[in-house]
Image 1 (cartoon, rainbow, N blue to C red):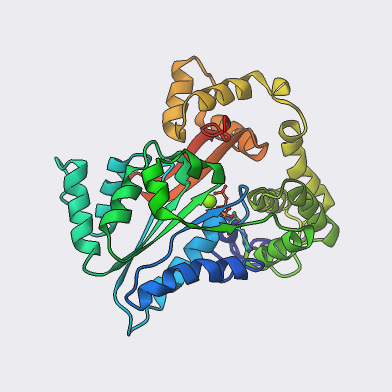
Image 2: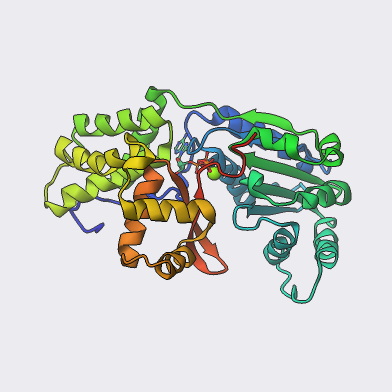
Length: 351
Ligand SMILES: Nc1ncnc2c1ncn2[C@@H]1O[C@H](COP(=O)(O)OP(=O)(O)OP(=O)(O)O)[C@@H](O)[C@H]1O
Ligand SMILES: [Mg+2]
């Protein structure tokens, strides 16, 4: 792959974690997020916000881009700002979040420390400067006490809370809500024209010049626009590219897009009942228990699942693309790169 003269120029640009230099159509939200942080640059307390919207529409990417700019271009006249980002799917309790924050702040001696001790360490470090705390997938937390601690005991901070479910906020303890009073930043669905623009930009990064037949590309845009989730678009671009590559062709054509789409159709247009028995078993497993792909594979084997890890991965990919489950790659965590799996919208369906 990525070889001279190949269809792919930089396949990494199709990873959902890959961050483009700018996010077209999200300039306004980018500015709103940056405005929440701005007071910190003037030694004042920052503003807090809840960033919400459907899956795959640029919330995480927009926040990460703002944080990256802050990190790479610090204002020399402004106070030092600690930039902290936690995915609460992975770190879903106050204790785990504090451990993570300590580690990000460079404090290593976290063993045998309780939640209170850990917070004192965090407080000590960040109160000498200012801090931005971004909590992604905030609705996945089991307790929100950490917000109370941070809000009341860190002097100069901005809290960015990111979620698919803005209703989550109303489930939070009143004593937190009455203090936090976050600004709401809405991410609306992209229009088909915007999806075209975004996928075009990704193609320029990822594929060689002229790799795509226009109609083949449009098929993928149409499918992505139907769901609104750009992750699906990136997945389909890669799959079609790979289908073309397998045939050693110089162009990605309608047939390759069709091949990419046909892998999905079983899962997107049919209801759960029509899944293969193996896919159903895996779906039930993931719905019952969120966790790391490797751990769930072991569970699957323990329950008599006969597929290889590769087959398991493939099923998971299909279930994810079909919207039955959520799969997220986490890069550079404690265990290296892992994929986390969870039943779709499980935790907040009731609200
Ligand atoms: N305006 C845009 N320009 C370029 N790429 C974009 C844009 N919006 C989203 N993307 C890309 O789409 C993918 C999904 O976006 P992102 O991960 O930010 O979704 P999200 O809104 O955080 O979804 P979720 O709620 O499921 O976490 C990422 O690869 C991101 O870079
Ligand atoms: Mg996200």
